[in-house]
Image (cartoon, rainbow, N blue to C red; front, side, top):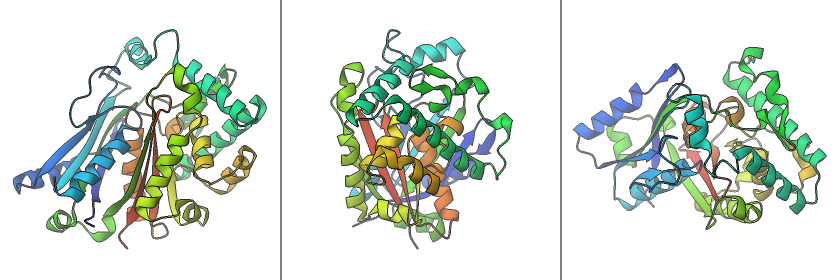
Length: 356
């Protein structure tokens, strides 16, 4: 089967980083007349309930959906190269109230914090757990994110880089500020994908190429408060994970437990990463989560809580980071990236592999 390869990636976060490398490669492709398609992740400023334009994607699962389409476009021969692009100036591009209004996607009567709390309540009930255990798991998750983030910031994690103490307080009975994505970030990212022939034309070194080995998607028919009970089953997340593993011919859970793989779980609120650990078979019971988190880092960025969450773009940031970390790591040859859309009605899992 023809391969779809990630051949380059670039991002800017707040005032650091550059897109020049990717943009230069894209310009070369245009000059060479390569069949080239851009897939765009919508920013917050695009109203949540507006019609979706062609080649546009929306929700936290959008970048994984775009990756699935990019893979298919390349493998089918419909395109020789695809770029997935996303840009959202959440920190400087919106007034505070404007940002809050746009984020109220379920209406003023059902804020995201209330939605997260209801998800947690139903999740706890489904698993026969209680609030105390859930709060313990949320604590262990955030400690795990801090360990990953410490690696990203060169082993120095100063007080200035951690959330203010007030964010450790409970906003709802089951939800602290640090349990949520931090949206105060300016982000722009690009992920360049091609067939092997284009990679050779551009003289991309083999070690900088990742195969998009598998992408699994699982969707429910609806999102929002009336669908919470369906969402917390996370059967559709299990469907997405298994499909990705089957496509990639990979037992990812085994490789990850053995220390051979990297993982970036979507960390927008604690229910989501816990559900991933359960549905992937990395743990069998909620009570096993703390011990597992003591041994394994489930993000490579520090999660959306510390690396921050640019609305529809966190999984794009994760794909870019996964490309860069796998390309530089002699010890890891496989990586998985998870995406969660809305309250969780869309789930996506991508598995990437090095070529060596």
